[in-house]
Length: 436
Image 1 (tube, rainbow, N blue to C red):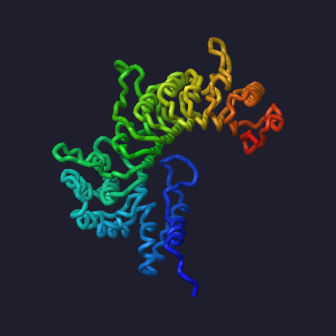
Image 2: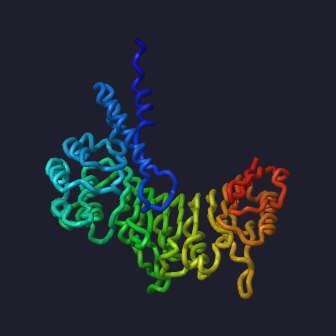
């Protein structure tokens, strides 16, 4: 008989079977999760579950991986965690986007776990009332999500789809039940990553509500349909989204509504930001304020000196597509750590010169010397001029770290890539230059 595998080897194998919250493709954050993804994660859970039942040794090793990530809540799993705080303590990531556990199961689980939950009494009452309303109508009371959050003291990553407002149960949980007479510690002290999906593309959620979930431990925010607009004409420049400093290092917003003053507000409140991705949209939603890229560029130069990756995609934003946006980002040389830039050419340097408009800047005038990857989402009509700029950029040597340029275009590159020490290739509607 061959000798048993060392525990370290078994744990390494189990780590590959551990479910995840990762989604295939970006998509819209309010899209339904693909059935094949859920089936794949369920298959992993079944395999780990069988392993954990095969022996005491394997159970001890497999359980932390089996409970590490919960891609979908279930009426079978919740009672198990409510009875055993150790099992609940294994959970590091959960997707609370799907609800449907019945009132009786929720009530029994809450009753079982209540002695060891140590919840503020005010929040206990709110949760109990919300559970009692489950099933009365189609409204999601937030009881299922709030009960899971109450159980999972070691949670590090949360994906959630639901109403986030001034009076909902989930924000009340993060607020500590808004109790003024009880000293309240952080409810989920280890939470690092927050993913907020959305019910539909019709509405947005104000950042003033979302920020209540962004406790000091949260470093990553992935969110859909967030409204971070600030009125540029508000009194004495006071933003509408005034709030506390945030610890965010990575922000990824899809179908966002945000203007220049809003970005200024974000960057001031997130001084440690390393990566920022904003995809505006959707095209049917009229923004309150047209995009002013001059203001966005100014905010970046003033407050984003630590930024390493920046994506600004406004291809579906209504004021941009209808020609009502203004200005350009302009020089980004004051972003000394920027390595990756994804943006449309006209947003970066300005539109092709028209009567009364400023002449567009060249790429050499706007790109920081730290840049390694440049991706132009759209290009100006004069692609020959763009190619000349790229050749000058490469030959000039100022951007010595630049190793990849990608452009959305079908026309070939006018320069001699091989002579420049670069490789040229096409993929679908993209032209890609890679330094050899």
